[in-house]
Length: 341
Image (cartoon, rainbow, N blue to C red; front, side, top):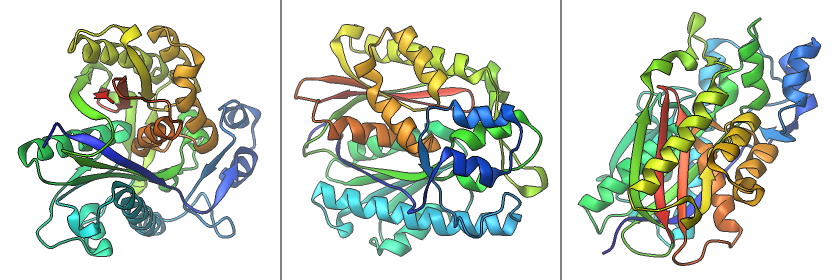
């Protein structure tokens, strides 16, 4: 059995897709400044787990919680079924399940609900990563990687599920409108094993800049989740992507020219553009990040899995290629993995 690798990737989105003009009307914003956040997002449309006939931006805490419960289980189960099939496994083959979300809470946690929904084996080992924001799929990937290293014959699945629409909170804060203009719903799953095709996970790295602890996260006024999103995130995030890339490359004595694939979290158009400049990348190297943002929006922790799926779907990676996979989250944190095809 070899080093843990990502043998399959899958994604899932809600059935309803909305263009930005429709979402602006549904959100209830009427001023030109907030409308500009939607128009200038470089997002064409997003999938949201809500019914356009009944949605109101003033749902109760109980309504939001119930929508998160239904959406997270439905999308999470769909993503897991797909990734297991793509890996050539049966659901009974899964030995370890790592789930993650930051847009809602369940107790029992999401992993327990998915074990029941999917009929996974009684002795499965599991972990749930909560409240780690947009970087949490990478944290869950670290745990799956470590598990497979400890148990080389085990097969692991990571699933990141975000129902960001349950954090739609209509108030007077500009950052709430920014969040409503870019975030979306979706799930991404990865199958991890010590053998098979797919990129080897050569190493992981975490990076914290605690002086920016308050730049991003959630508040819970009246029990409803409200996004905290400082305008400094675009600057902090891009700089930390650059720092993370340097750390990962230095760990193997690589230079930027040695890395062909940059799987970067589609945090927003300004973060992507600033990261492109700092990393000195050309447009094709960030094309998959831009594509996911334009067609799907920012799905928090699931987003980087969508970018990885686009990278694999392109058919561009060939044996011997190096890749960097990086996501950002509150803390302020960057989480990264070095991949080798």
